[in-house]
Amino acid sequence: MLLTHKDDIAAHESFRARFGTTRTMHRADGAARLQIEQVIDGEESIALDEDLLAIPTLATLAVMWCFSHKQKFLFTGDHLAWSPVRETLTAFRSVAWYSWPEQIRSMEKLLAYEFEWVLPGHGDMHHDSAANMKSYLERCIAWMKTRN
Image 1 (cartoon, rainbow, N blue to C red):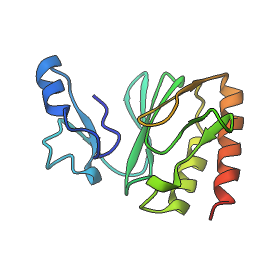
Image 2 (cartoon, rainbow, N blue to C red; image 1 turned 180 degrees about the vertical axis):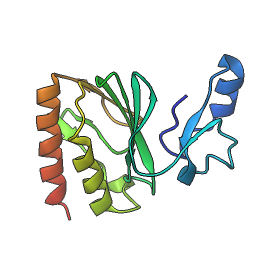
Image 3 (cartoon, one colour; image 1 turned 120 degrees about the horizontal axis):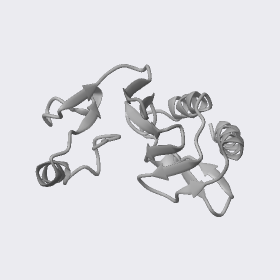
């Protein structure tokens, strides 16, 4: 079970008990306090196995992680989703209480990764080619920079 950040995780213990899954979470989000089995730390990307990469992003919280599965699926938590109105990826300043400039830096960091799906904790998911997704992410970052 990949816990991207400390809110919206109320049922994590019951899911662990029911399915016998290992929970993964960043230390800065209180993983030790929650007795999480796999605690990750730092700002460097971490391969959790050959198909799963944890990507640190300092976004809506002091630490948030995106998880990429086979460089195809990007699980983003709260800070990146699809906007059907704008027809591109979008960020949410309303949840960037930690730092909007840090959220922009986090989005720029994601440019180094290919993905075809964005699967957010909040907001709309979207599928497209990796090239188009990168273009959408670049548009999102440019838009974010106009909102400083």
